[in-house]
Length: 281
Image (cartoon, rainbow, N blue to C red):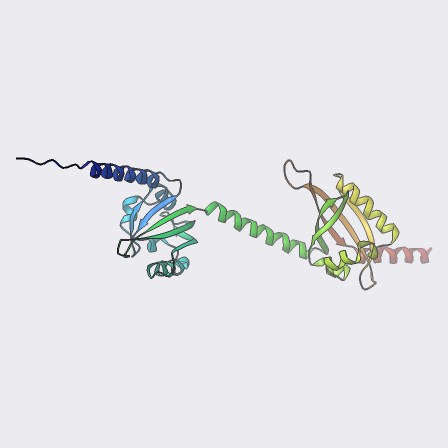
């Protein structure tokens, strides 16, 4: 006596489940970014090879600890706080930049993306974490900030001002100036542009500026002494040195970078010397 049951649907379901598991395992293990399944209390349940390379620990070492133990102390409260919000349902997903301590001691910056998987009854099962190594980007950002700080500091210490501009219609138009500009011209760059540059120069000085700007726009270095009267009517002298540079490879657009050194005192002394020499003769 026997019975035969049709389990074709069950077998297809089992095969689909195995294929799905294999696809997940392949995508998880060989992902280009770090992947991890993390328990609600922070324990590493499953990690891929990319994450191990990022933090320097083996999979076995990570599974024996939790994410809190390798998170930088300054980032831990923020990270744990968002985990709690996900567990209580007030947050569905979060992204943050944080630091891990590498096994050899150095700091690794990562972009962390976390989502929570819940069971059929709504219980918290585990977190799915995606971890991208952004250390190089953060180091580049730090170098850029430091470079900008040095540049701005030096620019503000120049006895005069530093300026940047763009070349348009054969002439340079200022787009940024350091703080010294206001000390020389007695007004902001916006006010200077509103009044028009010609209001600060006589015909001879303006002609010098136009010729120098044209030469700079064509690729020649500019070096010229220019007299002007600032917004208060006081006469000033500037030694202007500038150079046009391309915005980037293959670009026809140019920027002008330069330094305008305040040489008013030097010009005053030269004039006084000439007058004294004339009187002596």
